[in-house]
Length: 159
Image 1 (cartoon, rainbow, N blue to C red):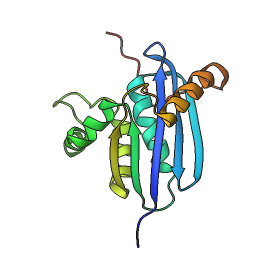
Image 2 (cartoon, rainbow, N blue to C red):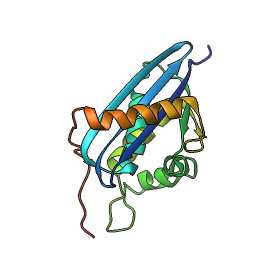
Image 3 (cartoon, helix red, strand yellow):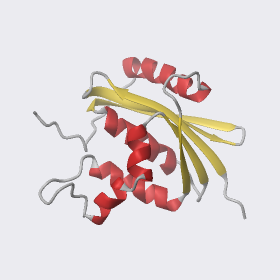
Image 4 (cartoon, one colour):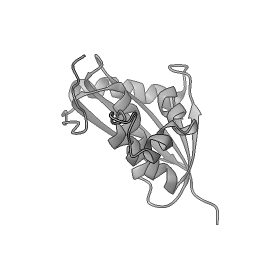
C-alpha cells in the first residue's frame, strides 16, 4: 500500500537573534491544508528551524512520504550529511566535554525522520514560493499579536 504523500512548509525566525521568535507551518495532504504556529519569548533562529519540522512531523498520524520544503541549509545539511546522526551516535556530545547544540531538538527530529520517508527540498528564501511567502507573512503578523511561550530547551550563553 502506498504511503500518504504530505508536503510541509514553514517560515520562522527570532528577531533579533536570540530574542522572541517562532514559526508558522503549513501541512498539505491532497486538497487539505492545516496551519500551525507557536511563538516564544526567548529563542534562536536555529531552534525555530528545527521546531517547525518537528511540529509538522508530529502532526502526522501514520507513516507518510513527506516532502519538507525549507530555505534552511542548517536543517538540510545536518540531516542529509549525517552530522546529527553522528552526534546521536556520540551520545549527543560535540566534543569529549561539550554537549551538542540544540541536542534536545535534534534528538526529537531524528526520531521523527526515522518514522517516515522524508525528503528535504531546498526553497530559495523569498523567491515567490507561494507557501513559503504565506508562512513568512503570517509569521511576521503572529509574532506581534500572539501569546509568547517559554522555550524550555533554550539556554542563554554569554559570550
